[in-house]
Length: 79
Image (cartoon, rainbow, N blue to C red; front, side, top):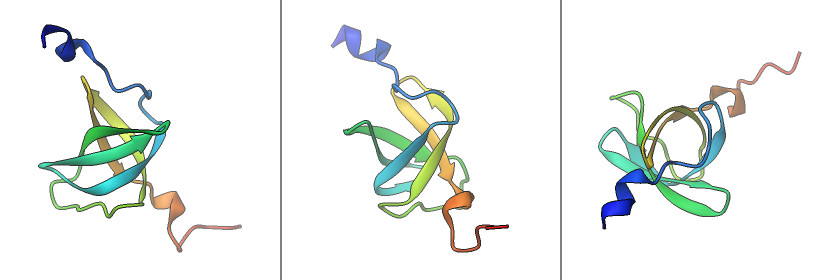
């Protein structure tokens, strides 16, 4: 439909989302605010597993470009 191209991913850059399925540079999905949206990984070598917390680094219309939020890993600095 004509209006579909004007749909924009609803989160701002820097927002957190959750990978809804494995996301690769070719594409994937993230869950934001209860809805699934198209997404792709920022890093061409990275595969983001489902359930991974990600940060929105860029928005290409309805597609979120995301990267793994390294603050959520087990190596988080608790000091």
